[in-house]
Structure formats: structure tokens, C-alpha cells
Image (cartoon, rainbow, N blue to C red):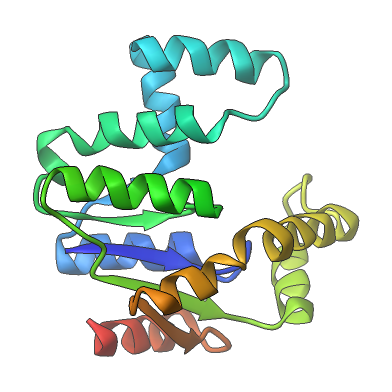
Length: 181
């Protein structure tokens, strides 16, 4: 089973991915963690990504997708995974579809966790992280709305998108996701 957890920063994708992974025994493929592992393992893509990250630039879609492919080639992901934070734009979505198609797989569900922007800002400010100022949070939401949210149409058109209300406690949101699965 291949699941994409989708939604704006702060809606709880990482929390829900961890719960699903633990309770349903589906590995969680975090692109951030896969990137850090590739850098640490000094894979060819990891070395390129390290140079880009150290120069303060964003890693390109091609490199991120390549690192996801490297991660998916590992045995623990042979029966599927939960994506959280990937894909982030149409280029990455199309690359993921091609990558999965090449191995005879496809995304089963894209679960969009919906939370209003003001609730997201409140949640993220309560986390108390030093990089979570209101200005930074609103900027991240703008980036999401401009670059990532258009994927809602992409996945709707592919018959994969299921939206749920994320305005509830962690267990209630989990129950809503579990009902879909």
C-alpha cells in the first residue's frame, strides 16, 4: 500500500504518518530523513545534495526524486510506504507516478488533512520552535498554497484524493484516516 499524507505545514502529517506506520506496519518514508540518510551514506546523490544544502540552496526536484527512488529500492519499502511531505509540486508528483509505474505500483490514496490557516498558525506557534515565528509560518503557508496545493486538483483528476477534517485531536484524525484505509 502506498499512501501520501497531504496538507499544509502544521496539519499533523508527520504525527499521523508515525501512528499509521506503528499501528498498520507500513513504513514511513520521510523525504527529509531519506535526504539526511543519503548524505550520511555519501551516495552519489547524497554527495550532490550535501553540496547544495551546505551552500544554502534548495535541493532540486530531480535530486529529491532520485533520493526517494534510492530509499524505495530498500527492502523495507518493497510492500509500500507512507509519504509525508512528498510530492510537493506537480513535477515531483509526475516523477513519483513514473517511478512507481516502472515497478508496477501506484499510489493507493492521497489523504488530504484539511485545517484552516488560522488554526495552523495557532498550532505551530504553540509548538514553541524557535523557527516558528508567525511571519515564517505564514510564509510557509503561502509557499504551500502556491506550489503544493495545486496538487489537490492533480490527485482529484487521478481519482486518488480523499480529504478529511484535521480539526480534531490526534486520535480522532487517526480514526478518520483509518476509516478511509
